[in-house]
Length: 420
Image (cartoon, rainbow, N blue to C red; front, side):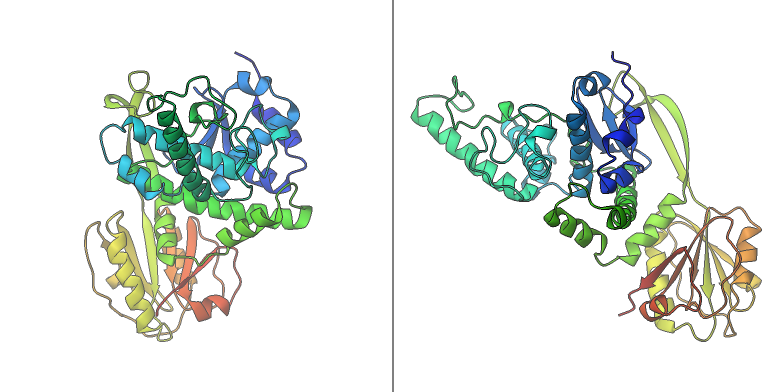
């Protein structure tokens, strides 16, 4: 095997691609059991790029850069984390996809590559890659979505099958092939899509995928901010628009709340031969993962916090109790020690107000800092001076008005609750 180490070359390869260079810093790159390259979400909700050193060693620098950009585009366009087309989701419901269903998956993989490769160009990719206007795709325009190409490829496949039947050939028997014939097996797809979000996920896999989606959005925001200062490189106007649309979409505060809880969870792992490794069955032992989280939720009880805000928050906490336990910390100018309680997993609690005084954020901060918590969420109207730093990650939740008109500025995340 080649001793090529991709990490030693990434900066040089992406020096003219500020957006992708910034995105690359947030993606782990490691050698893996893979013929070429591919991206996936690991068990902890982090993005990984696996690569084969022999494959990269045989490419030119332009092609190496193009492959990196290709893989990162799969993340940007949510090919890894997004839902498959409905008919493909239905295919995954069975025990084993039929030959026809496998063919549909192949068309989807080609469609995803077509939607990307147009923006990179054939000169910057491995030879014979599938690209709009190229071999077998001469009638395909560029700058379309994977869904659009998928629909067109299905029509193309149907036309090819009808042509084969007219020529007396059975389904899937393409003969020697003629110019204009479409054969998915010869389409030139070079990377692996095996670890994409396919089929019904386990609760653990879905949790990792949800975390990855939030991390990707944050990474894309940071990368876009950097690109706006240093330039976008080869990212065209249509891609820039799509990227900005994705990162400026309305935030679902309920998903953010769940994301905060899940990223605060500690993972205790141990290898066990009794658990089958899903990626490498029979080769590596599986891993048993037990996740726990100690979350403090400080609820501002001051009179200026509306009952509507409290009701919205308590409603969501009842749902959050399905995945974690919390310690609820009521406060105004001090912590209401006699009303602190553990909201245990699976329980429901009605909204309650136990104080009506002013607001002091130092009180709950000191209380939480003095204990072993992994995360601290503060429900408040932000109408008080900024407190000292938190020893664990902290997030603020308020209504839309107070999120836009805070009493103090903070680099910590502030989420507006939709109370309507």
